[in-house]
Length: 360
Image 1 (cartoon, rainbow, N blue to C red):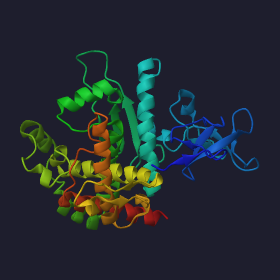
Image 2: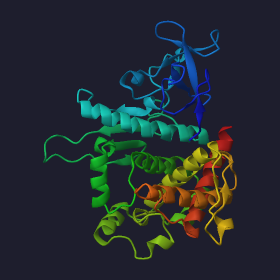
Image 3: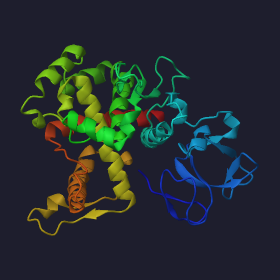
């Protein structure tokens, strides 16, 4: 994630801020520029960007009223919702206070996801624009009846369903333990599920990419239902760490792709934050310090060579894990990235850059 400044007073602000704590100017995200901007009142319901009183006017996305969005909508578009919120097909019943809190948490993760996708130049099209190839989200709660089927988080032809209990820290931690996972976050769910969507959009209809993808991830024509049953019955192979980023990635080539895609976004987005802070890693107690030294100065979204990204990721992830352990917390990144996984990540990086370059 980038760093943002209030364009009125230059105070550093968070991606989710809708008010500058220093100068009290309202803030919003200009989606075209992918920047947080300070706002000035134009009339009762519209704003202009600070210093641009004679320029375009904006409203906040309609979900700003629920403290679920700070993105701006040009008034000329006649839209109520921003580029991220227009992707919602179903949101929870908001007459339940607990549902509002969980929905707000989900929106934080979804907005960060969409921002990353827009930075990469990937197609972000809602199902209201294209029913067949668009993207949509259902945020659903389990029915109160104990015997009713549970909402399953997953992807189906561009429709991503998220059970809103994933936005509750206790519920999510219980699920993590039950699934014997080392990592489970709201943003991780979004990144994984959208990986399935982009497999459909970027890989499935490209014979060249599909052939290369099958060489790296395996044959996606294997029966998915049978593969899932086998995984839950037998678990992953004992040597899975040599070839896969996670145990769940061993289930089926589609899951390997989605898991690796999610980790690609973890890596580039975290490195972008580190580069925005100008972080440098120079461990003082290592005889191989050269291999663990990095000056993280490049934006990974603009970096062509994935090897350059990995040369920065190893030192940074080691430093982050060490910092967390000093606070008595679990590792930020409890994974080992082996050469076969790097090869898969490199393929994803190349595919994303090809699509982004084409859009430019």
